[in-house]
Image 1 (cartoon, rainbow, N blue to C red):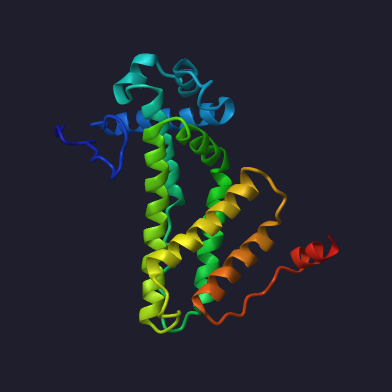
Image 2 (tube, rainbow, N blue to C red):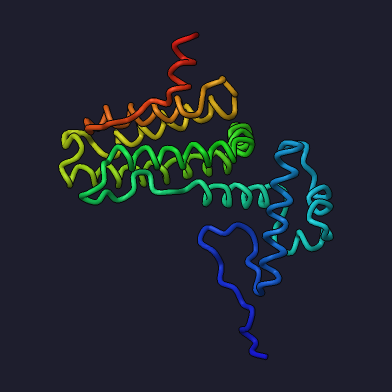
Length: 229
């Protein structure tokens, strides 16, 4: 058997020690998944490494093979969540596609992903307030999304589909911050907003800010519910 068979390469942004075999990669991934369960269930401060190893059905020594402690495995959990949530802010728009449709699809993907990861987003917010390393992680995560969206806005401007007078980066910061806070309020603070109404409003703000023509349709049930309040 070749000595390189089953070897794996480190993933970009991988936190902790890199496994050298596919079996090791599976073990490491299992630890990350187990840690997510424990962190979401018990919170960051109350989570214990022994609980993570019990959930992962492995020894404490195995955990220390890949991670130095709770901080590092939590960082790995957050990195995995970021990779799941990271999608193009405004995907490439071809000549036969309406920008508003692409923006709506992108916003939907972001909101759905945020909803799936809401407990982790709440934990990151809490931990970032007391730990400088996680504060930096939160800032870097936000900047990654802002850069993605800025590139999308630049693409729309080059195609003559968005207001050319807008600064792409500054506009992206405003729009990205808006939808991020809407998602936090809706899925972490549970302020009761209807998902379709949230999506419609966020997309409408995007289109109006960029001066993009749109034919957005408001979800009938959501509009009726809102008017009845």
